[in-house]
Length: 316
Image (cartoon, rainbow, N blue to C red; front, side):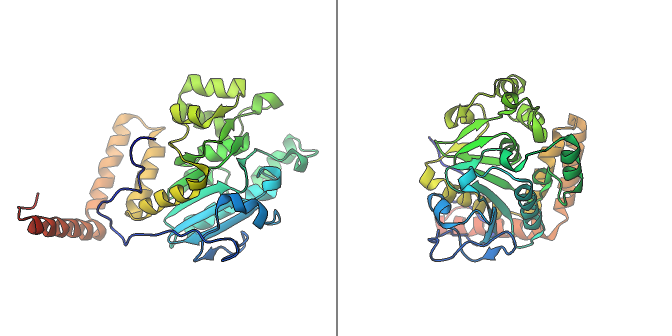
């Protein structure tokens, strides 16, 4: 693609520059959802399917202020079971509450992001069982929309059904050229599960959402980028690196700013202009009184003065 990806250009940073180094799976084995490890990243996604057993359906790593969550059932194209879905939601919840985490990246192991629900684990499922399961889960299904931190999806392959809903809840989506997207619900006699209709309509517009939902056709990465479903297409062997670098660039900014602006964007979907404007002004007043603004503004002025002195000009 033409242009420069955010996270790859130089500029004023408010925190020390964050570097990522992908280690081989032999260097640092990935942990299960029960104990997120700090200090090492998983190896390239191509290696995950062969190095991580499906017994740990969710793998979480926390490195340099980024939580990397991997959907890890490659033998089933990372299709969700009820237990896997709950583990994923708990991973998001834990990352959101972790003060050392400033951004979250989610991806899939092997050749898929998430192929939807694993119907082999849903034998005998009916409305009553589904309702009970949803009411009793510890973390809300829409936890991704309630995060106080950016969520980036690195879509490495197929996305379908409920997997689509989870991908749509990310703030930004990177995709490999091989990525394919389908809602799939109409082919199964289902409706748009997991708020997919609400999400798709806001992301790509009513007509495109109707097309994707009613036809259940498969769209490729190129079309997904063209309609705004994904923001960047990245070669598969660079996908995770680029998503993590982007997350690192976001993590270098004010955590307060990121949380408030994320809330503003999603709240604005349901607000009229006067309400959104009034809220924005209230937040500006709040931020101006925070010590962080005073500190960062002073640092920026000092950096401008230093650059001007070096160039022999007056500060701008």
